Image (tube, rainbow, N blue to C red; front, side, top):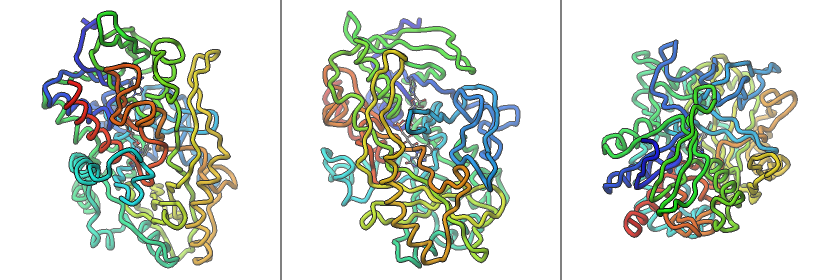
Length: 497
Ligand code: FDA
């Protein structure tokens, strides 16, 4: 039965994959979705589906025996601890110069992310996707993505009064005193639910520090938006704990997709093959790039062009903390969903979000994730000797991002008479410059593919995810990934099917 033939197969169940599957199914096409992570629909021994940030366990990390938390230290103490190896939700994938955090499971990155749902400013859209018509994106596809994802902005009156955003109000005050534009950052969290959390009338999620390892309530991940609509079509099958390893042209037309079924310790239970008329790569920037680079280099898909694996960027991610004065307490209760931002893109190439430190104690710290303008791009390549795909990123390249972030925080520190925290990423280390949450690129639109995601060299193969985007979106990326997938699949359904 697993040698089945399907009209459309989608690799990955994140934003690009869910948009693709929903629109194909609504157009009458049967779809098989393949996801290497778990379904995340069953509670663990504690009655909860997802683990808390403060108490990570086996559910928290993808096939690791020790946690690798983005914030590795606090007040000088290392935070990481041993856990059983398990197909957990957050992958801290290590390449030579960077750790790339990604979601694993049905829903992809939507399961683990901060919910910040930001549409780029129209004047910067040409930097983001230079070959895409902005009128179509801002007239049709960004509004469609925002509506489907359930994006909204916090009620400003509640923001001004609730204890759980004291940290964000301190961030706003410091930004404004240094004359930086302050913006509310839209989010997919259900604000009414958060208000009820604050009132103590519902189980807590954002106010219990849930983020990174999943949210048990309140966050409108893909599990609450696209995935129920996909299920309602009755045309989509989802196979969790299945990892695609190969795609090759089938003798009778279409493509043979090989996959490994995994158990929850990462072992291979069995190998299967499915033949599909069309295959949509939506395994995320890293997942799609790794597959395509391997398949081109090993002769499975030799006609893919030389743009495969190129143009990868980190969206300029860099983190830092500032040590506040005792009169600028940031609060022991901090909502895990960020909603405040400092926009210094025009002057300094940095958009900084005021991020929570949901430790449950007063830290007198302001913590920030900056998205910065950087032209550094890395390339994926096949390492035949090791049998794996490498990435050419160098940690030193983050200096551009640090410099951009400093255009905001050096000025705020000078104005406030404060200093950077040096205890969050190691001992005496100011910058969280070893990671990204926003991998983008590797199969760039209009280069590795045509201007709608059709892979050159192979009719019926498509890229539908963050791999299409050339390294930087000026803001957090998932709204753009969703909107671009909506644009591309509409064209593909209209012209290819
Ligand atoms: P995505 O990564 O979502 O999905 C790909 C799926 O494919 C995954 O489920 C993966 O397991 C699966 N897969 C990979 N290889 C496979 C294979 N070989 N076989 C089968 N399945 C395979 N963005 C934002 O806009 N706002 C925010 O607040 C945040 N915050 C944030 C926090 C954290 C901790 C992370 C890790 C990320 C964010 N992001 C974010 C980034 C955002 O989540 C990310 O950009 C999108 O999820 C990417 O969407 P894609 O559809 O490209 O892939």
